[in-house]
Structures are given as C-alpha cells and as structure tokens.
Amino acid sequence: MRKPVRSVTKTIRATPRNDFLIEIAARVQRRTNSSFIENAAVEFALSVKLHDGRTVRDIIDKAWHVDRSERLKRLYEIDRSLLTYSEECELVGKEKLNVS
Image (cartoon, rainbow, N blue to C red; front, side, top):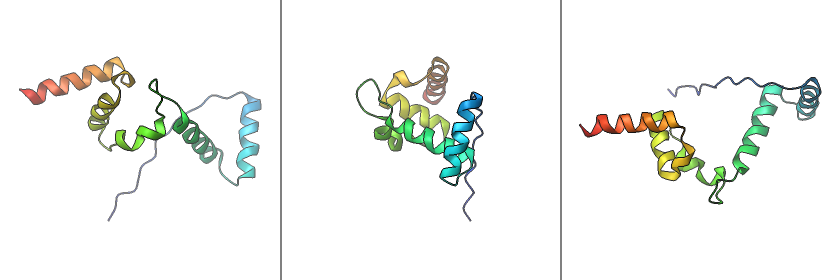
C-alpha cells in the first residue's frame, strides 16, 4: 500500500485587501483559499528564471528527490549558488563522513 503524501504547512501574511482578493478569486475557481494560493505560488515559482536563463520548471524534475540530502546534492550539481551557507556546510560535512 502506498504511503499518503504529506503536505507541508506554510503561513503567509497578507493585507486585508489582498486577503479579500484571494478569497474572491478562490471562490470564482471553487477552491479553498489554501488551494488557490498553492496553485498560484506553484505557477509563479515554475516561471522564475535562474541566473543562467533556465527556469525552475527546467530543473525541478532533475532537482527533486524525497530525501533532503539527495536534493541538496542535486541542487549543488545544478547550481551551487542555490544552496544556503548552512546547506553547503551540511553537504560538505556529509561528504567528509562518506569519504572516511
């Protein structure tokens, strides 16, 4: 039996006007506010350009993995500037442990 996919909770801050705007748009599409926001964020995120001209849409399938460590390795291979300093340190620490 397949494990159900767990969702992650994110919190956003919006002005009352923007909150109302989201509510109206979600109603038009017969979605929950949460579903509407997730869909809008995903669509926008996929169109974001990396510094080399590729988009997140171009790299997401290559970068995604269920294991966080593997995701970090893949991001490093795609473009190391996408890693935070702490992620780089974590990746280097794991590499040192694997080499010994």
